[in-house]
Image (cartoon, rainbow, N blue to C red; front, top):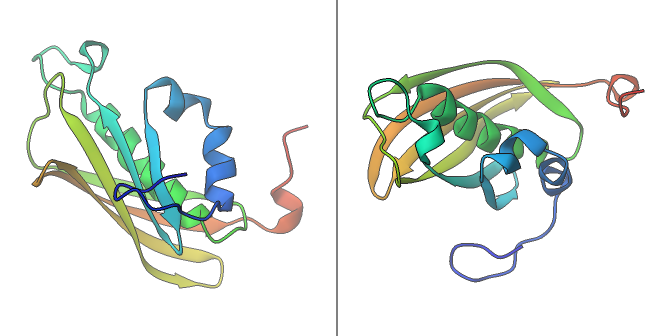
Length: 145
């Protein structure tokens, strides 16, 4: 894994989770970096992501933010899932825009955590997301069977 500045980053549990994330990868989402409760992911808006107003559908922006959130909260190692999330859309996105989501851990206590994600188009903030996480008990975190 190579970061935006070309340096190598350590592989985390988040990388393993992303490798198995067919939904995010099928939309072209890329994991830029993940570790220590933070993550960066990016996605280019395609014509298939446009709504009836010819702007990016908010669901895709949410999915990018949610993916960065998942990468950040799973970077610690135990399987962690979303307990909830909300987003504020600040600016419309358009076909061809390259969106980058920056996730940061705000707090983690016991099995609960709060993470903030800023979605940017270049230097411009297009959305703000807050996610609440819950780390699963080890017996609940096994593979589906």
